[in-house]
Image (cartoon, rainbow, N blue to C red; front, side, top):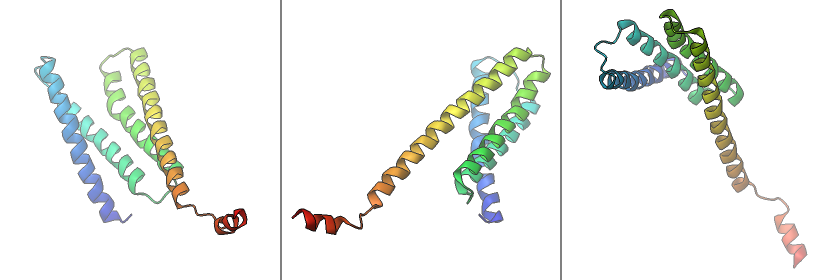
Length: 146
């Protein structure tokens, strides 16, 4: 993938993800009767959206093997999540056990979702491969049966 195309896709994905997450955060604040939303939280959400956009663009448009793309996607997604959210909540005095439990839950949820995605992808490839397969000996075997 060319650098210019990567940057364009990265910026578009970052804008989409940040719009969705900012909207969800504002809705959460409205429903929770919160009067303010910290400016640092905006920057953390934007940083996480950038990590997620980079991970998704690399995963979708890279020429690497699926296993390398999965490893890079996991590292960027979970690393971005840890940097942007877990550190923030660890700083404000949230008990360490709940931050650790939340990190484990997110990791397990990510592993389940990625496992399902890879299984569906593998099944689709096998199905497409079976449709493309044509036996070299089909005409010979058909003639022998007659």
